[in-house]
Amino acid sequence: MANIRQLATGNWQAQVRRRGIKPATKTFKTRIEASRWARLLESEVDRGVFIDRSEAERATLGELIDRYLTEVTPGKKSARQEKQRLSALKAKLGSYSLAAVRSSHIAEYRDSRLSKGLAGATVVKELNSLSHLFDVAIKDWGIGLPANPAKMVRRPQVARGRDRRLLPGEESKLFSTCKQSRARMLLPVVRFAIETGMRMGEILSLTWRNVDMAQRVATLPDTKTGEARQVPLSTAALAAISSLPRHISDGRVFWTWNRSDSLENVWRRAVKSAGIEDLRFHDLRHEAVSRLFELGLNPMEVASISGHKTLQMLKRYTHLKASELVKKLA
Image (cartoon, rainbow, N blue to C red; front, side):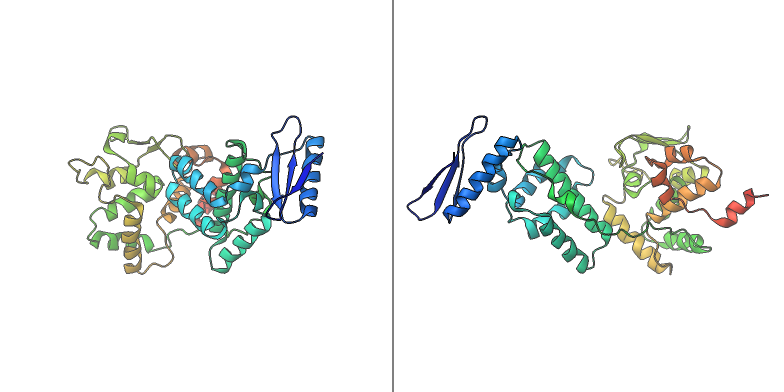
């Protein structure tokens, strides 16, 4: 039987002592609230579903985010992006105790982000980061929560994947503009991207020691998927890098740019100068993968080059030109 007593402050304190759990105590404004809480807790103990929520009631979501950013995020390749996502969540929901966070709060956050014009894919990533945070708290840190509230929130619709490929004449205009750029490595890096299908981060981290010019193979020891892969280099890919100047201390092939956003800025200016609309650097990966299929490579061969883990993911990057496919038809 729970012990319920009135404190000198006028509030009511309920204490439950049962075998198998440590004493649970909580204070309420009224005796009715204290009795209701005690009955619920005793019922959970009797049914074997009791969860100690004391830590979840003391800690805030903001504190949990701070711990996650310290212990979990640094080990991820997308650490910078995840920090931005969790910081936005902390600003809006950080003051709630973990036990008080409801799916309705997260749904309101979702709707507010969408109303500000954020893409559905961006909001989905934020909700997925929050969901993983709760999973870690429950499974690894032993924080008593009955369920992961983020998993009960409907995800917004995500726009279809881009199918942008180079249109007739765009490649020559792009190459001409890149050649005139003050960034001497811009044309080689664009050509290399089209020939290899490598991601921007993979290209910028590629070192000369991982390029075998004789075997025509570039080795990527650390990729987005966490697995190493080898990329065969075409004659055009070799030509793009063979005459590049080498840095005395930086062993990277494209050492001009230390960060992806630096290359992105140069890329955007070149695309604008070339008069090409809606072309992103990552679209060159779409172009490269599609060309590999048009050359006659099978899906497994293309996947080994591009690094896609599933054929469904590979399909998103593959947009074959009907004019090339018709050549294979009788």
